[in-house]
Length: 120
Image (cartoon, rainbow, N blue to C red; front, side):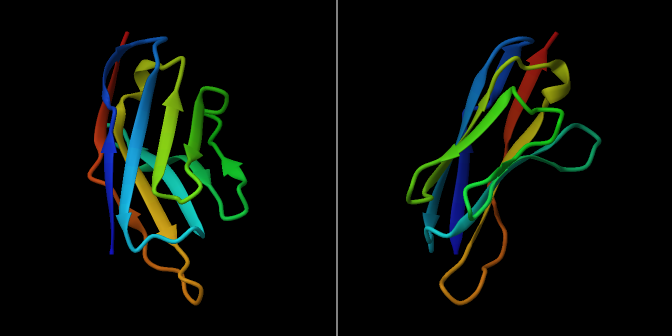
């Protein structure tokens, strides 16, 4: 089992910045896919950023150039630096991770979510 706990959400004005953190504990391995998702009010959850096993990073066009995902080497923490925030970035943000134990990939783990509200 893996536990993920997000922090760093809050209220910010448009154009501002926030840094989200996600602390992972439990059965963690260094081979992992680590991601941030968000769910705007009344909408479906969507991918915001992902670090793949080979270190490549994916961002959707809506956040490309404004958001930056990073992790520590041990995969015990991940971060999402969000700059030039817009009202449409308002959502509950979730961290998610999946680990390879040397034989099999485990399930997707999710944090509890942290609210980010961007005022205009």
